[in-house]
Image (cartoon, rainbow, N blue to C red; front, side):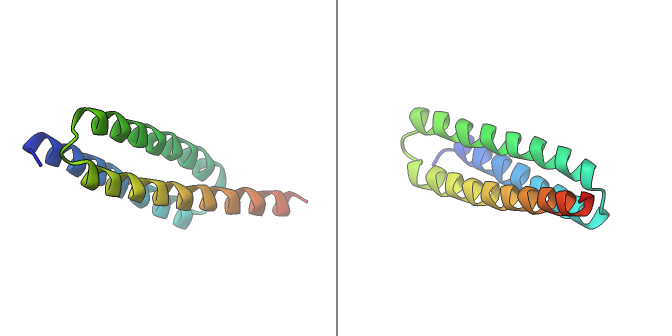
Length: 97
């Protein structure tokens, strides 16, 4: 794996760590409306990162295994974020009834 690919993977991993940190802080803050907006932005970021990896895999064929693993981690994170978003939306709906 070349240095550019290592930097790319590192950058994506760092961005994903920041996303998890932001979601965690938002959950703890209790500000539901702010959290809903933030999670939608994070989900958008994750989708972009997944697409970036797909494009990178087309260019960099040597590191497909590592990039695929990173893509799998992103998809798992996306599922987690979507789950948290759904739970919060349901909570808001229940509280408004």
